[in-house]
Image (cartoon, rainbow, N blue to C red; front, side, top):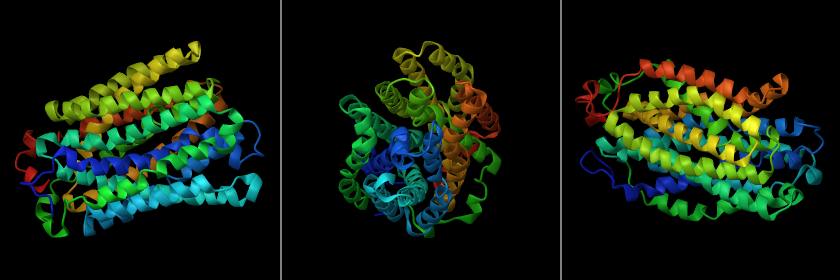
Length: 426
């Protein structure tokens, strides 16, 4: 069955996309949450902060193949359909998850260990680039026009559910295991837990209907819908960078390495990020459907610019769990308020026949350049400047650029003057 304009999918039937998406991001993000422990396992000879830098560099390697995966699997989704591309990306991420969990340490097999680690990270990046491309297009096309923002919010909500799940796993492991046990096998257990959902995810995804056939293409109408590339890139640069600094990744490393707090405190912050973002994402989608994409995006961006400096300064000065949880809660909620309408707007501005490949390529390029390098760059800036405020200044610049790009975008929500008559091609 192919989903048509008269046959939109009810929300309960797109849950399969969410399950698969959550598993893929759980796997990809767990690496970041355990960056300190993975550095100890695969780079034991590195002194000081160099082991962590190498671990973060390997994390960034996973972004190298994301543009390739976004383009190749996105193109596959634009030709064969969204469903087969989502199944393939899920199979690849499952193989990478098992590979990382079972790779022996440097002490056991020497230099082959980090080489295998890099290989599996490359597979992860390839699969994740294609996953976001196909699943975002699927959600937009399965949604009734006036609920498209809410449906697309599932993309981020399931990612943040993965953050929450990874935070629960990490917090539990940090509470019951010693630091030595976390280094030796605790982080591996976190990866293996994610494999339990793979069979269920495959069954659910194979049961999905298709939302697109290549024969639907209408080149005449599509030419009118392409947004300026620099605007899309700036928005995605903001989304990628902020996500991997204060949204879902670097908070765990920052709390341990820069604030010198215990792993338990770091994973408590991760739990807070996941919980607040899961709540904020659907609210953001509903607001974007009600008031439009631009007002919600711009309001959140301005709030981030005003608050990020004071929040980071408070964390540095107080170094208390309470302050860390408050700061991460606020930033995670604000991030959800601009990422959902931003991705919805980007998706709506791309023609349907190039939607998956367009989303995958642009998103993956921006996250590969800015998101993948963010943790490494921030750690290097902190080391070079001696200032733990480096993340605040860095993200402030990026969000400022993104906010300027937002002002150049036309409103894409159904019902605006620019969109009258265009919904039939969406």
